[in-house]
Length: 385
Image (tube, rainbow, N blue to C red; front, side, top):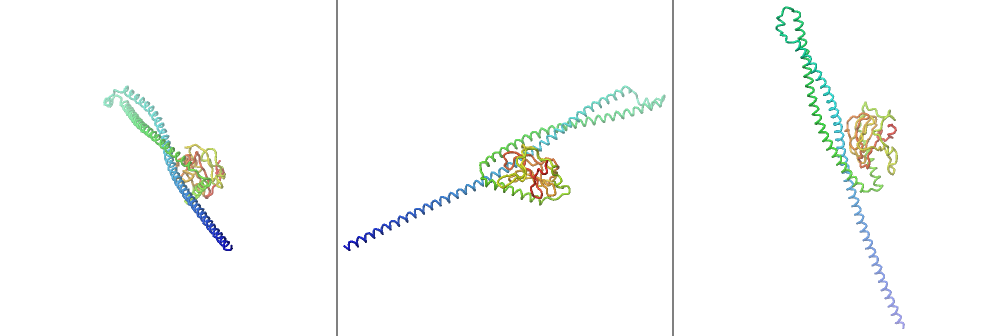
């Protein structure tokens, strides 16, 4: 009986051991399975991260390429717009010259007719008093005094006639010159008109290319954080550039700054102020100048005389002109379609310096305008009335 109990206990212990081994094996298998699954999930997540990073890098590269293309498109627009503006001025001057020549021609024709009439009268008078032989007059000794007076009269009469003939010849010569100049100016006018048509086509083509690039850029959506970073980078670049310009600016005796001109200067363009100085731009960024609405192509005028310090494309602000007014004062004009002045040019108050545009990736046209004193932005309303 005891032997049976011992055998039974032994079998029971063996069974428990086997069950324990099976449980441990199952648990180990479950752990291995779970570990493998976790490893696979980690690998999948890592691959997703790499794929996402690649997508972000490709998107950033594509956006950078589009922004570079936008810059080239806007520079092409600027070149074409400036050429159109210059041709417009040439056409204006040529038409003015043609008008002056036509007036001169009309005056010369009147003068020519008057001279012809006077010369005809002199010839008729000479003929009616003529048929006198000078030799007979000299040999006629009956009235010596009368002969002398007649000879003197003939002398003065001939001198007057010669002078009128010379005047007439000069009038005819100048009239021919005026007619030739008219033909030349007319040919130049025709050439300028053809040139303007080509330039306008180039401008239209460049504007179309810019629109296409801008549409592609708009599809590259940016998060608010990315937009903020982009605006911040553009502003920092502007500050760096203005600091550099401030160091390059040399004080000139005839540039006395703007300190005495508060509320006396005219705005660079007329238009509604869309963004005011100090208003919120995005997040903690604020406007350092004003944004003025105006149609494309309107002339931007210098608020005061000075010297052009900068005239080029600047990221975030497009085509920008900066004027040094002396004593640390500078004015900045951005988002232009074309710049009419080059670095180093002197400009007078009210002189056109640019054309309103929407460069810098703007969807609508307008002028971004700043005034700075020793690098610090100040409210333009303090100076402009």
